[in-house]
Length: 450
Image (cartoon, rainbow, N blue to C red; front, top):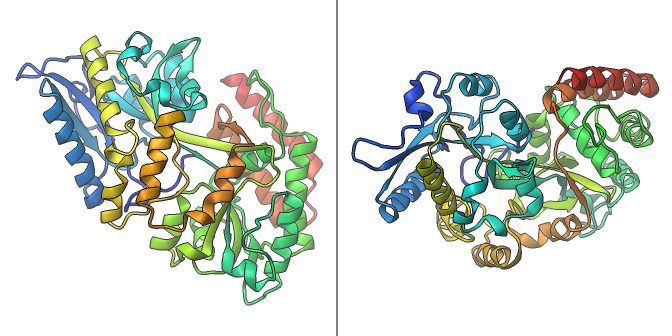
């Protein structure tokens, strides 16, 4: 799944559904515009409804073109940045932009179907490439060749309500570090009554499968084996995830009676002050405040319970296989300017974000390493307008966790796992052994067809 929020004033920016445009408009490989400049089409321009973000984006494009008068950037907007319903059709039909947005989970697929340009010969021209976290760079590396550039990354953690922790007699500065502690704390929070829920989880629209995966990673498990050929959910770790959910739901009654929840349901509960804990990425926090009635001072973020791993995701840009060398070089320059300069650009100009009342100081995205990371973090800290101390344990704890991306064929696998999670949360007598055995077989079939 993609991260569900965005650091700036708009909750989730997105773009490019240019099916109505001609193939030439979306990525023809023709690098000579009428004025003799190298022309590139790009996507993920914020939509017109996100006025502030769109202005920032267009201002940054204009600054880039002024700095590089030989390059003409044509941006396409729509919502979302990548629409799963049209993505493959655009690729197959030759209608994709010259520089196009992808989720991490789609990188290998784009390479496998032969629609990505090999960027390896041009990497020396991307000044920032070596400063990007290796685990993120590796996502776009296939058989030793580089086919894309990361733009942002996120990891899952535990959002919790400090005020409810205090009311329940818990230490708001000490989040639960194990799933046993989550269960115990959730029970105490639910005991406050008046509709208060201790812990909530998703169980519909593939989101239950997504969270099952995150919880499995936190226990040290995997959804598929290292070769991506066989399911590995019918394991002690998989059983532990479901047993914990079952017991919180039915033995402790700490998850509330309403189930089959999706992200908006859970965010509404947290924003209204009726929920103690749920799993999410840091970008949920501004949504909880700006859209759901929450308060920054009441919201804290801790690392994934379990201490063994966390699910990571994010996005980046790939290049059309039809791109000329001039277009690839121009596109890499554009990415450096827009997204990959610490403390600057569309995602990194924290001073500009603060002036426009956007949240600054959230612990992610954290893209860089070494001196570049230090520079970016210093600029973020200097402009912080949220309680950064509420997120310190997340930052510290993440350093000890294994970072794992989503499994192959994630959405189809999540559909299977959705049924497993929803059964456990809606049926007291759900047979966990049978559910995981059947799910394992279904996932094996999905992987066999891949």
